[in-house]
Length: 134
Image 1 (cartoon, rainbow, N blue to C red):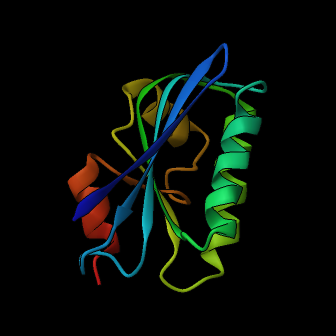
Image 2 (cartoon, rainbow, N blue to C red; image 1 turned 90 degrees about the horizontal axis):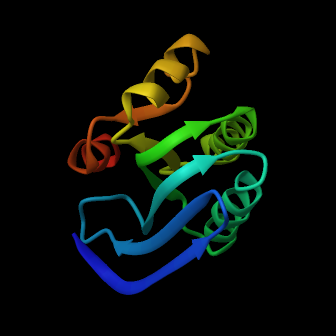
C-alpha cells in the first residue's frame, strides 16, 4: 500500500488532526484516508472532525481509518461524530470506519457505552487494513 504525499494538518486548541490519503494498491476495495488524531475530542474539536470526515465522503473516499493512539479524552460530541459517520458509510458497499490503536481510556469508554460492538476497532494499522481486505 502506497501513501500519497498529500497530507493535511488541522489544529484546534484541543486537537491536532492529520489527514493522509492512501492508495489501496489492491489491498483495499477502494481509496482510503488515515485520520491521525492527537489531543482531546470534545464539543469544540468534534465539529472539525465531522467536517473532515464529511469532506472525505463527498470526495468519494469511503474507507476511513482513524488512529486514536494520541487521543486523551473523548466526550459525547466525539462519540456522536463517530456514530453519525459510521451510520452514513454503513449504507454503502465497501465503505466504513475503523478506529485503531485505541488508548486504554478510549477503549474502556467504548466498552462501557457498548459502542465497541457497533464501531469496528483494530489494535493497529495492519489489522485495520486486514478488516477491509477484499
